[in-house]
Image 1 (cartoon, rainbow, N blue to C red):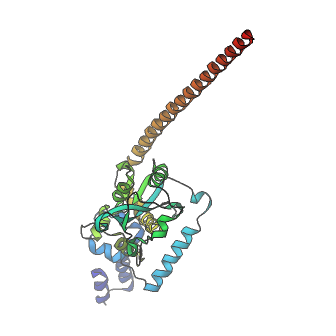
Image 2: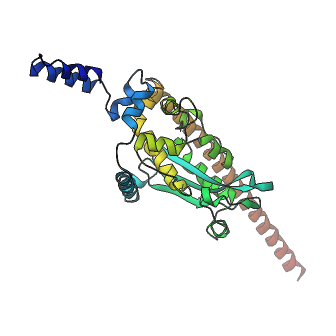
Amino acid sequence: MKASFEAKSKTTQSTTTTTTTTTTTKSSIPDKDELWFAEDVDEDTLKNVYTPKETPQEQKLKKKSIVAKMNAVSGDAAKLGKYVAIDCEMVGVGPDGVDSALARVSIVNYNGAVLLDCYVKPQEKVTDYRTHVSGIEPHHLESDEALTFKEAQYKTEAIIRNRILVGHAVHNDLQALILSHPALLIRDTSRYKPFRKLAKGRTPGLRMLVKEVLGITIQSGSHSSVEDARFTIHLYKSVKAEWEKSFGARSGLIIKKFLAKENQIEEKKKARKSVTIQEHVDSDEEEDDNSDSDSDADSDQDDYSD
C-alpha cells in the first residue's frame, strides 16, 4: 500500500494524477478469483486476500446459504459427473482403539449433491467410537441400513471409477476402503502447494483451509463426512482453473486418452464376461438336452419291456 500512501502525501499533485496512482495500486493486488494465476504468490498476499473479513454471524449465514444451495441441487446437476469428492469417518478398533476402521463413507458430485452416504459395519469389534470427532454412535453401525464393508467398497469403487477424485488426505480414505485410484485422477487439497503455503509448508488441515480460503467455519463439533466432502469440492472449485493449469497444457488430452484406454479395457472385460456367461448357458442347455435324451431312451426301454 506504499504507493497509495505516497499519493496521499503529495498534496501538490493534481487530482488526476492521484486518481491514476490509486487505481494502479488497487489492481496490483489480485482479485480472489484471479489469485492462483499469479506466478509468484507470497504468504502475506495469500492471507491478505483469503483472511475472512466477515463477522462470525456473517460467516454462519454464508455457510448456511452454501449448504442450502447444495441441498437444493436436483435434476442433471445432481447426477454423477466428471468430478466427485469423498470423505470417510473412522472408529477405533483393537487395544485402546488406536487402530482405525471405516465407519462412514460420503461422496458428493461437483455441485455438492450427495451420491453416496452410508454407515459401514466394521469387520472388527469397535473399541472407541470417537463420537466427539467422528459423530458415529453405536446405533449408526448396528442399523439394518448400515452396509457391510464389501458393499460399501463396491458402491464406492463404482462411483469413483474413471472420475477425478477430490479429497483431503484422500490416500487415508482409499486405504480405509482398500481401493486404489490413478494418481492422474486425484486432486488432494492437503497436497496442493498454494494451500500448503498457507500452512507454512506443513500439511494443512481441512478446517484451517476452509476458514482461510472460504471464510467458513466447519468441524466446530463432531465431523460430518458429507459436510467435509462438500467443502473439499468447494475448495477445489475455488482454485480449479489454476490447479488444472499447473499440470500443463496437454493434461486434458492426457486424461482423455487415459480414460479412453480404461474404457477399452472395461469393454473387453465385459465382453469376456459375456462370452463366459454364454458358454455356461450353452453348457447348461447341452446338459439339459442330454438329460432329455436319456429320459427318452429310458422311456423307450420301459415301453419295450412292457
